[in-house]
Length: 540
Image (tube, rainbow, N blue to C red; front, side, top):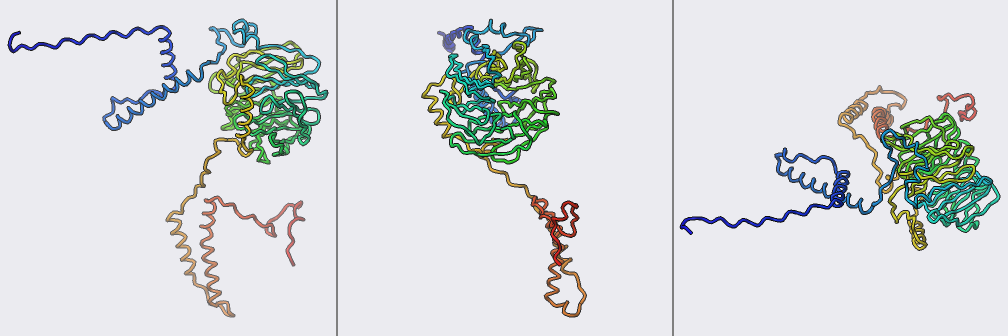
């Protein structure tokens, strides 16, 4: 080696290139990126344009945390909610409401193809239906006294019997062990074996029944327009109110806040809770009798139908109408995913929200001509719509109606006997009092905001002080016969000061919101002739 020459160090060995991802891994990575984009908070801040180093560092940390939280939410959704809800997707100019049940059955799997059925029972109809909260059991009641309970998971008939009198409505209580039936004179409670447990004579001739599962309250409306609330865990009658709007058989419970909605013959819809004698809300919805009421799962939407052949969608946050459709309906029901089913004669129509509460026709199903549909009800956690009609009951497939992922701590369609027993005990321990039923349940456990009081400004204080000084400096004439005594003068001065302060005091009372005192009925107030005989006569 020559002196003074410098040898370069040997070059580092090149790293091997990363192996290419498999197509399945690429698809998984792409799906994860799409989920992360769904949970991201939009476009991040432009950090290059910032000159403040401190602000730039703070924003970079926040953007990093936002990205981590979006990725964690996407992974949680992937593992905790693995199933995606299906829906009918048309090709080009094809309409989804032209797809029949036969076309759907040819495309679904074997288990789903067994769920739709038609049960023809022409003697004891028309039929009313009800499902448990987890959607596993179905209860049907014929108007002429036929009751039957079915396990829809295994398609087994658990119990069937006849009560030999009119049946107006049926509903499950907290689980499938007990159910209530509104019969000819009174509501009755039966167990799963068909044994009569209770006769609720205080409810009278009940027309409709609703059960509030969180509060363990059975609500009923009878033929005299009386609304009853009874606690089924203790047997106590919690409330009994007269609606004052006549007979009605339209009643529905809001699943969000447990408020009962009633539809009346005058076109009004009233909302009730057990701790209020008067309705919380009274809405004039139709120009004729209301035939059906339904509430969305989120509690923000209400659908009403009337004899005026209109279905109206209402926003309960503003109590304003969102859309109105010229459709006649005898029964309404919202699914867990927001689909709206309505029945009209022998036809059932399902509407879907296409954005902005704009409901458009999604599916149609027509049963045999001459059959009159009485009630439509979506089955929870399944893409199934139950139909009770004059000649029996039916079940049809409605893709995209049920929640595909269920929480086993809330509702478990696959629960065992032990899990059912433990859930019942937990439900009784977590039972909410009737006072928790309100229009806005988010107000529970919050502190009531104090009333805003406007402080007295310096100007008003100075004006009041000037008025008091002017009242004190008033000079009075000297009077004879003891009317100018020092005590008389002091009393007169106090009266002048009070008269000067009075307008300022009245103004402060109005600001504080204090109610005025009731005006006494005397000679100064002129009463109508019909009430003059009740006025107090002046003492002579």
